[in-house]
Length: 60
Image (cartoon, rainbow, N blue to C red; front, top):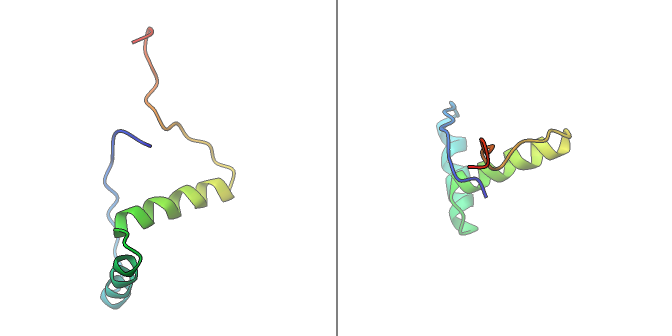
């Protein structure tokens, strides 16, 4: 799992947001957990590789 985080801000219709939050809650997940999984799935679908750990510099 990633150690550091970055913020992603987006605009969404309030009704969709409410429905999304309710669905996430019914599945015992946070909206952030679901969005992170959606992003991982999207990257994998498109064959995009990415680092999950920061690169080490001089063996540190």
